[in-house]
Image (cartoon, helix red, strand yellow):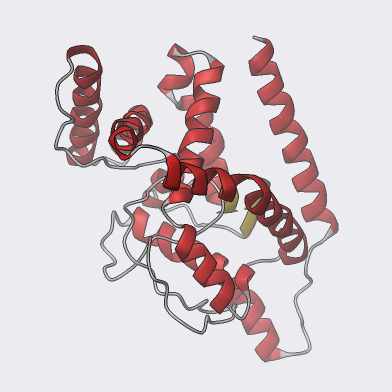
Length: 277
């Protein structure tokens, strides 16, 4: 109970600080310059000054904590333990994927997620080999997108990374709707999230470094890649030829399609393509 109160307290403080920063650091539209106004509207980032401040803090946390942990895991963890450990993490995400797939009316993906989760449980109890079903990743932000809800303005969340109004709402919905949170102790949910952040970060270390090194504007490039990745996820990968956005935060789908590395409208292009994860 105390742990749950602490989690809610931290979340409340982060939300309050984030909202205060957004309110106090809005970028006003440049009304006297048509080209600048068009770029402002294309970026859809009215909170850019505050978002950049949060992004700087997130980048510092990544540099000091998350990246070293990810490098340690990638280089020192025994390979024979990585696969079962990562399979457990993925399987623990399947219940929320099942719910969201059902809400989207996608019975096929709900069935795949259910089979993956059931197979993972059998693996733990009976010692069977890991099921061959590839995991599916569905979240409430994707569900809202499938329902036709617009993305809303871009938001950089403390620690959680790139988001928007729709996906932030989805993150909150998933937190309260996740069955694992009801049947397991809060410590398990926290450990699952932290472990998944380290594992996902370990898979894009080189890609993030390339993006940092080659981007004319690292913040704008991350913003563009996040939007491309989320659009592809909502379409369940229908937009081909794309790569996972190397963002700082909790990646929900490390098997997302490949994204182009240019920043797109409202951002600066990178000078080279990513190497991938």
